[in-house]
Length: 230
Image (cartoon, rainbow, N blue to C red; front, side, top):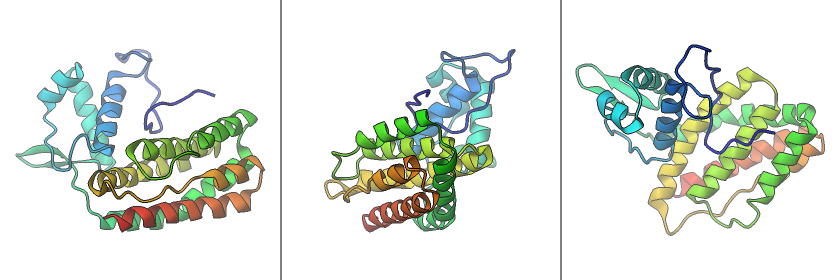
């Protein structure tokens, strides 16, 4: 199974004529992913300006890929445009975390249930490896959130429903951004981790009902932990 190392969204397949960056992605896709990850991990802070010319220099791409990336980020509510002022990183509203959790709870459960029915043996092996890598974590950190996100993404892929994967990826990106924001401001009193061992175990045991319940419990527990430090 192909290993994804960043917080990846459902990637667009580059056309044969589109300029590509290393790795085979289009320049627009590469620019989008770098900006998206910097916004999610709050390296780019809420309210920071996203100047097209400066980003073109920083990312070493032309203006067209930057504009395409910004358009996609605005569509995903990670950036916002103000007439006559420009484009900025979207502000963070803590109340959004609760609303996102309300939407995600049933969808995360559905993804886990479908993964229990549809995941390949290779996908189950990868999920187990990822879950084991998190066993020693005792608190939520930036690295922990990144690892947890990778497991969520792997479950979305294992559900083998592209519409569900795309929807959950967008919602997850917004939620992870709030969680990174909270962790950055809560140190040294970060909450204890909420592992996904039960979710992965149920998926790989081919138990859709148990996988659904475990995924929902994980999300609600993690959400409560993060809100407690906000």
